[in-house]
Length: 355
Image (cartoon, rainbow, N blue to C red; front, side, top):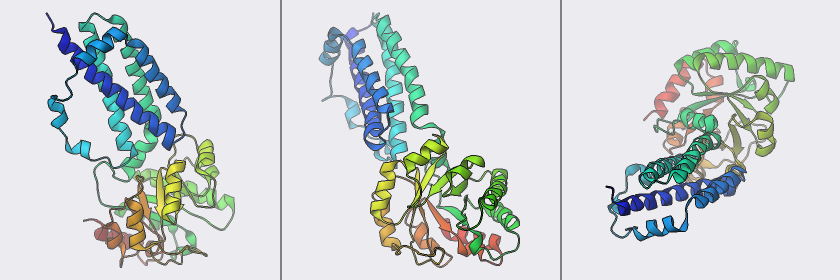
């Protein structure tokens, strides 16, 4: 015969886990993203409360042993490290799902089928909630920037034909992809939409061949037409929320930022990653913003949780220093596009950022 008091103790712990996990995710959706999913999570918490009668809650509370629970002394490495919101959400959604499963099973020991069935239904809703909140978009961003395995800074090539000195862009891009560029962003500040679209389609096909993320600069319409992997917006482009309405929930959106205040604002508005710079003086823009330097980059990295792409004046003389800041990616334009042998320059840059 089971000892009911021990079952109540297990239930008490897992009711707490379930409520705590849901609250963390609800506050993220509500206060960080202004996402209506917060209302759905609030409803889940209300439904959970309706499943718990006062007698059950009293029995659970009576068996609580927080002061002597050996679990209070355990603290794993994974608990100590949450590198971004994605990691926090993942941990708390899994905590809630696991707690729901324990409650579902233990309810059977107490002959409480209504509780067990209600919790089972809630558990399956949590699986869908995980997909809706985290989804493939944030998972892709984490994979692209190596946030899960902490690999070296990714090499992010911004392609702008105004700075290309070769004769066959597609051939040179294929060569640099073979060597190992991690991202290609297509940027065209001048010229017709037809040329922008044609070039975007050609580069996207090449990136697809090498399974490399293809990013369209500034233009949500072009990003949609070519089915780009991501959209990157400047400070003078559409608000992120408006761009999100156009490109849908699955396409990551990056935002160029030039100060800590802009970075924090972009994070609050729902950017999936940030460009930050110029780190050093650069002629890649007609009216460049003031350089932020390594000090400005490091200060910003300490205060945002999104992946950051450092950009502006990066080349073989300074890219290693920038990569050591633990930035997610380093962006290059002229150092590769103006090189006599772009693929060889990529090899050199990679050797300087892999440590």
